[in-house]
Image 1: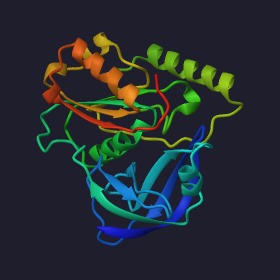
Image 2: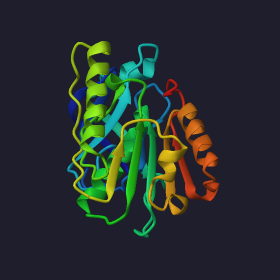
Image 3: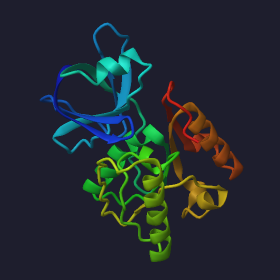
Amino acid sequence: MEATLSLLEKKQIATNVYAFYFEKPEGFTYKAGQFVEINVPTFKPAFFSLASAPYEDRLMIATRWRSDSPFKEAFIKIDELPIKGPFGNFVLPEDTSIPIVLLAGGIGITPFLSIAKQASYEERTTQIDLFYVNKTTQDALFYTKLNRPTLTPDKEKEIMFTSLSLTKKHEPFMVELFELQVQNPQFTFTPFLPNARDIEDVPNYDKAKYYLCGSPTSVTNFKKLLASVNIPKEQVKVEDFPGYPTTF
């Protein structure tokens, strides 16, 4: 489908990261995890994941602003955006019995935000574990305290204290961040880089489907992590974002 999106709202959601909300065109449908081709005048087409969920009445795209990128300079000033799509098979399987592990680095959280929100909305019974890696808290996109049954009060306090300390150290205030409230008890969220034991602690980790998204370096490190716990390549799906800085 080809359409021109009308900008409804733009927000800064983290350091140099902006979220763009567009009116959803009539008849436009997509699956959580898919992306669209965008066309900014005078530039080559680019591809962006949809961070909004299919059930929502607005489309949302997030991107990191870079002063050395004429494309990004032009993109953040747009009022209308021609798109094509949706595209991609970075979506959950129909079989809800397959456990899902999502590994996100930095801006790679965008398709997973869509996936997590849609799964919650549909009350999907799939076990979903999301690991989200950032350099520092002020780079966190959509950071929130999620409902996590496996998180003890002490560990939760430790994570929140660390987050606040990093925020005070690197920024005078926390920019407005979106809250993702996942009510699905099958969903867990871990806001730090997992190690081999963390992966092995995921129930049925050896039978899970793994989704990797982030910078090329992030994805490479995720692949090495999964190889260390003998996850077959057939159980891994990848989506990377060339051109972004190293996440970790």
